[in-house]
Image 1 (tube, rainbow, N blue to C red):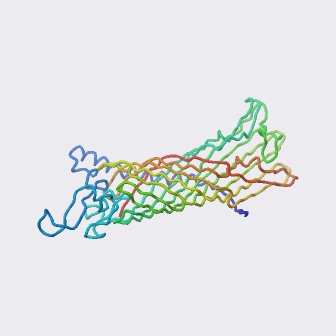
Image 2: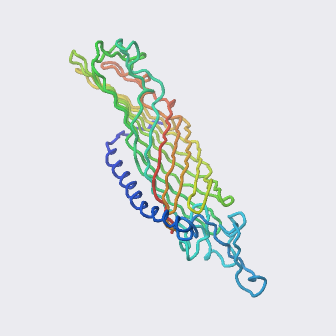
Image 3: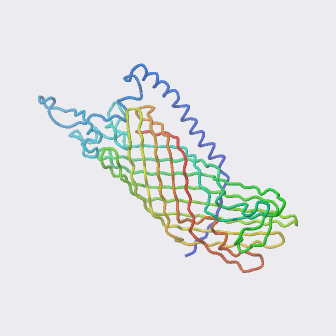
Amino acid sequence: MTAVRPFVIRSTGGTVTAATFLIATLAVVFTTHRVEAARQSWDQGPEGSVLVGPGPYEAAPAIVDGPVDGGADGVQIDDGLGGGFGGADGCGQCGGTGCADCGPSSAFGLVACGPDHCGKACWIGRADALLLWRNAPPDRPLLDNDAVGGTFLNANGMDSTPAAGPRFSIFRVNKCTGHALEATYLRAANFRSLRPLEELDTPYVLAAPGIYGNSDLTIDSGTANLGSRIQSFELNRHHCHGRHIRFLAGFRWIEWQEQFTLQGASLGGIDDFYQTNCINDLYGGQIGIDANIWGTPWFRLDGVVKAGAYYNNAVQSSMYTTTGADPASKTVGLSPLSGAFAGEVGLTGVMPITNCLDIRFGYFGLWLSGIAQPTQQLTGQQLTPGQPEDGTINANGGVLLQGVSLGLEGRW
């Protein structure tokens, strides 16, 4: 089955970067005063600080039916640590007062909400700014030059500048069981690797086995450019297991787009332009663990691990133009191209600003394999002006994205 659609990487990096850093700046400005006030209060006494209980990291008492102090009928207060979700394991049913009087105020249910906390919190919202780096593509020689004694440019040396973007999450939490439904969207653009080809004593030559079936062409100057971006949406069901662990399973869509261009000029007045675009649309299921690793009254450390298998609907489009000849192009799409894999890890530190608002900062990593990448398609195309055009597509590429996040979490 063939799938073809246009490919565009838009120059939105400036807009996305500006918006991302605006979010980060507002978060820092907003929290600086509160954190400093908290530190001063901490020095004066823990009871006066917003960083200590009752707060979103302190286990609140459970409410159960029964006599008070073995005497009159009424409500008994159990101040043990089993009160996060009303049960000793953190996921049991609420006490005799029912769901209306207990429920978690965070994704991990480390507190049973009450009138002094966040009301009866059922929703958690997160907004993070991401700053990510990607690794270079796999090994593939591109240009040789005698002046440097061999390969001048290899795809595995095209490291990209960082890309910025947002990540938004919303959780709907069951107040009695601790189970939750999560929706998350993230996007990062534009990763960019720009390599100018300065004029040397000898011209550049297309490295073996050439590009698009052309192996004897030379370039005196020019530019190699690699751009990419990612976006993802996932819908997960979280199953609470104890006070600090949630197992998750759900659907995820990941789109990885990448474009490679090589523009060269020769002293004879010949201009050559090579371009390959790849789109990978991954659809599949994932499983994972979302855990509260460590918590104190003023700090929480969360970790997440996810992995999944994906159906890859991929398209590659290649084009070659040279002075005095009509462009030669070929588009190939396969659905599915192959089975792909995606794995994600995250480690996030969380500090409270108020009982219902936290600041988040952490590490994010995402690994994709079994994808089509432009520099891995250069050998499989036959694009020579005046000759029949032919092409293939392969999925022997992979990419690692990692970076930092900064944002806010709110509960209501």
